[in-house]
Length: 539
Image (cartoon, rainbow, N blue to C red):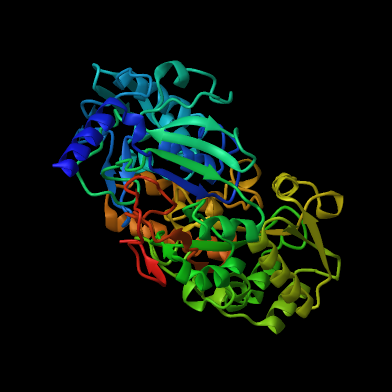
């Protein structure tokens, strides 16, 4: 009887004082600071990840790259492919309580398109876009745009997130500081609080998830923790100590140099988990504007000089199962995976590379290699390139810069000896290079229509643009192979291999979703460990 009375009193207390129930708080270490709460204004991956917490999208992609409706309930397209009508799901609301309307979506798409090349192509073909009623909007195109839902499901920044009209109508080149969306989490604080705190979010109780299973950025996005905190700790020892002690629950993107210590912490309940199905790809980017790499022979010299095995060892160290050679410009585990035209990338012939450099007119001037001092992965790749160039008889000028200066200098078109550069390295999520439209590495639109390095081939660009408007899947795959073959021939960039970067988490966390970047819906926090040891794959 006494026990029953205590249980009754406890139930009454919890009913009267819900604050007495401990909140579940997921504390995550992320690799970078959030540079802006406006994912349209910022092109960073962290701002994109923040966007998927706070905002929602019309379409998503599952972990096999299939396009799925998200905020959209259904859509129709006319036989000629020119008229599209989209109907929103019922019950969608912004964080301020206002219903999500078709007008909000139309204005949000206009703001996104001003910042995104795919959006700009879509708007170039748009004859009309307007709301038909509260839940339906229509697009009328001048020419077919077969991959319209795929464009609206893109995960590379900037993502077409839906905003309230009053925010979406602001100048797309003006930063928004108030992140109000309709996503599963509500932003409470950005870059405030304790020194390590980057952002804090709380569960959106009004969010209406889909009924299907979560996969990638598609399906049900159920926030199963009350609060989410992002932290950033730059000291590796302090970061590991916080995880082991339980002050933090996860480390996203731990440097590979930390993996040994994370693996050794398995008895303390620490696990390593791979969640990205297609991993990441490393690139070497050459400057097409200035000698010697304005000469195709010099660019091809670099193709056969690279040694993917050496680059991947420099990146992942003693974890060879996390990396592999790959010459597929759209990634080796994506629907368009193909190594067509990539034979030279896997060749590695120092002598032949030296001969080609000489034929291109290289006479020993310093080759400027940019090296970011505070990004260990990219610094390691830069060191490998410098070593290979010296083996080929080249003089090398490794310019060490912090990340901010590194990104500024790679945009500089001046000659290398006047503040420009010859080559730099970068890393990409395979999901963000998986087709001819989103893979900016293969764009060959010359000085004003290509990414840093500025390759130029109008014929390749015309072929690449045809991919978006081609409806037949077989024809699209053929175009993709031809585009890749042309990019290898032009040497727009050089893939250095593919790798998986696991995240580290305490065994008390479960429900990880396979996605190209960490997502935080579906995650549960338990009082006891629910996972086994080892490096695993998300289910």
